[in-house]
Amino acid sequence: MSDTTKPIAIVTGASTGIGRELAKEAARHGYDLLIAADEPEIEEAATELRGLGVKVEAVQADLSTTDGVDKLLAAAGGRTVEALMANAGRGLGKGFLDQDWNEVRGVVDTNITGTIYLIHKVGQAMRARNAGKILITGSIAGFMPGSFQAVYNGTKSFLNSFSWAIHNELKDTGVTVTCLMPGPTETEFFERGHLMDTEVGQAKKDDPAMVAKTGFEAMLRGDGDVVAGWKNKLQSAVANVLPAAVTAEMHRGMAEPGSGKQ
Ligand code: NAP
Image 1 (cartoon, rainbow, N blue to C red):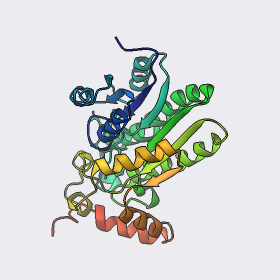
Image 2 (cartoon, rainbow, N blue to C red; image 1 turned 90 degrees about the vertical axis):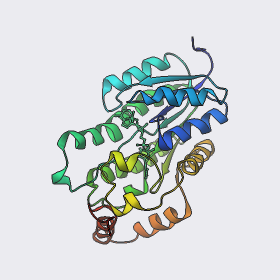
Image 3 (cartoon, rainbow, N blue to C red; image 1 turned 120 degrees about the vertical axis):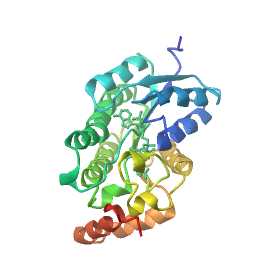
């Protein structure tokens, strides 16, 4: 039985990649955890995290659906959620018109709809207590039109913007909202998003543990956002001043199918 009085941290998408490393950071900081992902692998992550000496409960739920998010919320029960790391997300390569519609829909429903539904519910409880920390995994991809990853970049643009908006709305409360914006990171993201034949899919990428540590520390400070890694800081600063036509063409070079083969 879980202790219903001790505060917990929720980490979504904690089975692999950045989310799994965020969960490790939270465990090292003494948080009991409620972690979630769509596939059974989440149980294996829970076992590893328990080895760090904290209580861990795992929920297998499709967070692109209202029912899936409700299942996660039900598992939290009445417990105080001290920190929410809304990290679950997926990418999708290829030209927009060549993508499978159900996969397109899954990207929007996971990255946007499920994410903001969860934040809406947990955020209301945090505001009522006047305390809590929210970390949203956006992306530097949100700074540029994502030719050959158009829908994904759009969802991250949404999250980057949304995160700052609610950070501002809650500035006079004890609730902080931080947006973690990673650059390309060595996770299962590229394989799952059919991006392995692209330049970005094959390039050397950041360590997810470094990315998670950067994001977790920014969340603890209550920063509005953080870009992980100096190269990505530079790239996002440049992307913010270049015309969209230029960054869209740059993105084509990284994400067009076949761009990684030569
Ligand atoms: P990853 O290894 O593929 O991890 C994605 C996590 O999200 C997995 O735990 C996955 O679990 C979960 N997830 C995806 N769809 C879900 C759904 N519908 N319901 C429940 N869980 C779901 O990739 P990652 O790179 O760590 O991605 C984590 C976050 O970082 C994402 O939001 C991504 O957009 C963002 N990001 C990644 C990069 C990068 O280069 N890797 C860069 C910038 C931002 P299941 O396998 O169980 O579905």
